[in-house]
Figure 1 (cartoon, rainbow, N blue to C red):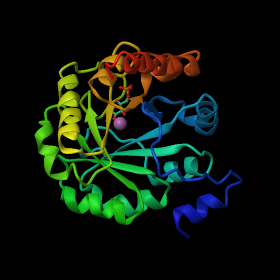
Figure 2: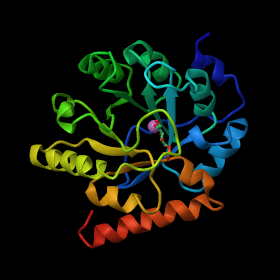
Figure 3: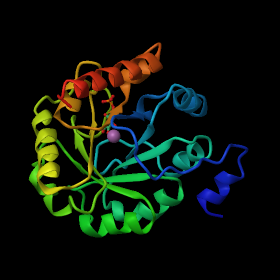
Amino acid sequence: MNLRHAAEKQNCKVRERSMTLLKTIQISASILSADMANLTAVTEGLERDGLDMLHFDVMDGQFVPNITFGMPVLAAVDHCTNLFLDVHLMIADPIRYVKQFAEAGADLITFHIESNSDPAATIAAIHEAGVKAGIVLKPNTPWEEAIPYLEQVEVVLVMTVEPGFGGQSFLWDMVEKVKALRQYAQEHGLSYQIEVDGGINAETAPRVIEAGAEILVIGSYLFRQADPKAAMNAIREEAAGLSAQGRA
Ligand SMILES: O=C(CO)[C@H](O)[C@H](O)COP(=O)(O)O
Ligand SMILES: [Co+2]
């Protein structure tokens, strides 16, 4: 019995898979900072609060010096939520696991360009599995290394901390990388969305939005909030204000 079949036996509602990213600014909550013992309740609460996506940080202890969770956790959450599932693979040779993460419910799979799988083949495998594909750049990887793949991907994820751990401080130099990727998309008529991940909070969010980011991964900041809905709305209002001023 595969994971999807097994999870369907649970008494959870079946999620309608959304294959479109509709809103201008989307918030993807990194469950790395969530109360893992109460993941279903946390997910349901955030969905009610208007969250757009759930971000799964998959770490293997090889590509990054930390180990988190894999397909079984994704499959269990998939069958308890309608939220879009954003899977960030921080693993060696990610192409090996594309099919399994797709079967477990991923809507978007992002993988590191620095990993040892061929990026073009990995993007093709993700698309073949019926899932949106994205490439991830570590802070020290120049944005230009993404150029050969930018026509193929739906998302480019700019790491704004070193991958491996939640709760780190935002690397301000990454704002220029986001700007460069936004400018390249405009100049070449490309439609990839820019996602940022690491150290996003009320202070850093406006700066990355202004630079051109559309998907914000928020972990520790969101899960620290007494009122996550108010925190998400404040960031969206700030984004709307920047947009009205022509700054985003
Ligand atoms: O990919 C990640 C770490 O490798 C996490 O998604 C990221 O760090 C989010 O957590 P926080 O908002 O606490 O920085
Ligand atoms: Co992440």
